[in-house]
Structures are given as structure tokens and as C-alpha cells.
Length: 174
Image (cartoon, rainbow, N blue to C red; front, side, top):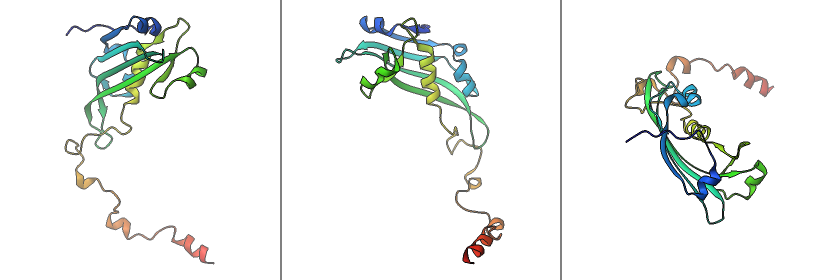
């Protein structure tokens, strides 16, 4: 498949009137903000977009994006490959006061001074939002063994130590 570069900005109203569909990619070097949030961006972002007018006469931009990134496991510190995938659906508004009239399924997006939207920024924002809060390998691939992962149990030497707050209990009784 040939890699088609997507535009950086687009006029969603014209796109919806012409029912334009885009299928292409943003190159790795264009994904600067995403690159700051991960160890490494491993592939171009594959993006599919559709512009149309819905039955309520609202302009709609519907899309999906996918990119492979390298993340650092928070358990063992090793890097691993992760695929970010997202689906989104927007309806452009002239200002944020108009977002009240949109149905809940549409996210509002504001036009710039030229009546366009920052397409690259939208795709990058959506991909960043899909990053896991705590990136980690699956248990079978992680270098940290299950025995080292203690949940809710204290080692014996810590369990035998007196509680430093026991003194406060004595004060409460007085």
C-alpha cells in the first residue's frame, strides 16, 4: 500500500459537503508531541477520516488512528512495543458557546481563524489520550517475577516492628 500524506489542516465544512474520505498517514517526524510522551515512535500513524453531514445538518468528522510506540514498563524498567488505537468523532463549532447544542456523541472542535481545524493536532491528541496511565508488560513477559510482586502482605521483619502510631492510641485514651 502506498503511503499517502494527510493534510495538516482541513476545512471540515467543505469536506462534509463533498463527503471526503481520507486514508493515509502522518510520518514519525510529524508526531513530535507524541514522541515526547513515549520512549520511541516506531511507525507512521495510520489514519482514516470521513467528513459528512448528519441528519441534524451538523458537520461531522469521524476517524480512527493507529500507531506503534515503545513504552517503558513501570514494573521492570524494560522497553516494550505497544499499539495505540483510537476512534473519534467531532463536530466543528465556531466558538465554545455552541458546544451545548451538540449531541453527546460528538466532541466539539473549534475552527482556527481560517475556518479550518488542525488535523494533525487532533490525531496526536487522540493518540496521546490512549496512552496507558501505567505502562507495563503483561505478567508473562515482564522481568519482575510474581514472587517479587507483593500485594497487601508485609515481610516478617516489618510485620514484627511496633507500630509507630501506637503512642497516639495511648494519648487518645487519656
